[in-house]
Image 1 (cartoon, rainbow, N blue to C red):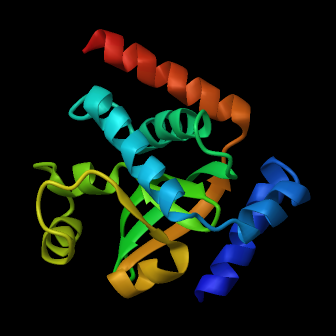
Image 2: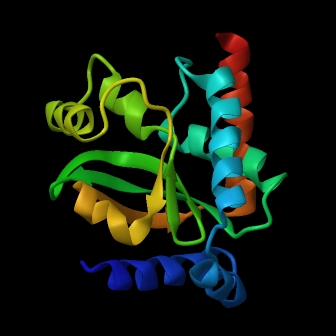
Length: 175
């Protein structure tokens, strides 16, 4: 699937869970350099609290989305779907954040560096990015060139994001 077709499909999912106006705003947004710096800083904040804890990729994405939304005026969506490497699905329960047409994946590196990581994911991430990374963030149209595929299944509603943040808080208290 080409990047433009994938973005159109994602826009339809956003319209279904939010509105067409939100979907139009989503497609048109582009980050400034200050926005990118803020995205990275907020990711570090979340990772300081949640790294190494027993949270799912969607929980991690939801926590990041909520924390980021407090500081950044942008269309921020939490997405669930599949993650693939070179066309091979390596996680069918993956979650990430879309900030406009930018992928922000808080779980990519922790998944790849885990002892039980899918071998193809681990090898690809180490070869392409190296060790000790925390946030993957790039324009969605460039992800395929990096060997990554993000296939959205659904865009979470605000209520679902809130519920995931609540689950993450419970998991953090239990740790």
